Amino acid sequence: MTPAETTIVLVVAIGVIALVMKWSSRDERPEDASHPPDAVDRLLAEVSGADPETAGEVVAISSEGWAFVPDGHGVQLIPPKDPDEDLPVPVSFGPGPVDPRTRRPLPPGKPGQHLDPGDLTGARVKRGAPWRLEALGRDGDYRAWFFETEEAARAALEMLERRIVRPPKDEYGEPRPPAPEDFDEARRVDEETLRALDEPEE
Image 1 (cartoon, rainbow, N blue to C red):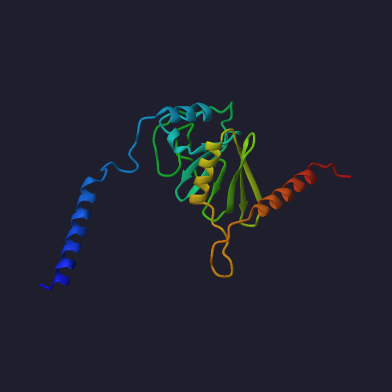
Image 2 (cartoon, one colour):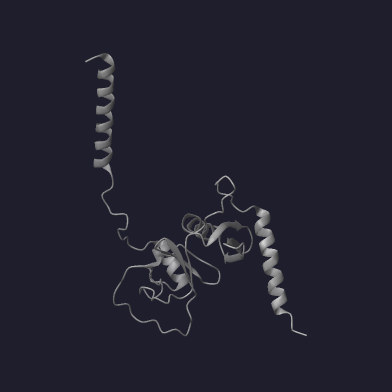
C-alpha cells in the first residue's frame, strides 16, 4: 500500500475502535427507568398534592398550583386540586400524561389546558415577586403564569421552549423570536381588555 492508503486505513481503524469503546461503555439503563423519589420529588408532592412516586413527572408548579406536565410532544397544564375533590385510589397506569395527584392517566377530556407545538411563538421569564413566565400565542395574545422561585419559572420556560414555542419566520425563512416590546405591548392590550371587562355597563 502507498503511504496515503496506509494513513486512511489507520484513521478508519482508529475511528472504529473509538466507536466500539464508546458503545460498550455507555450507560445501559433505559432513559425512562424509574427512580426512587428524591427530596425534590417529595417537595413537589407536598406543594402540588402529587404522589412522590410520580412527582418527578411534574416539571414545575405555579403559584396558583398549576402543574406543568409533559404530554407526548406537548404540555398539559393541570389545575390545582379542589380541596373538596375525592381522589380515587389508582389501580392502573396507561399511556399519556398522568395526573400527579391521583397517579391515574388523564381522561380524554383532560382537565386544565393542553399546549401543542406552535401554540406559543415566544416565552420569557420576568423577575419579580412572584416571578412571571410570559408567553405569546399564535395571534400575539398574552399569557402569563406566576412562580414563587426563579428555578421553577425557568424550568417551566425551558419545557415550553423545547416543546411548544415556535417563533414565526421572517421573509428569509429564519426564525424571528418576539422582541421585548412585543411582550410589553401584548401585556398592555391584555390589561386594557381586562379593565374594560371589569367596568360596569352603562
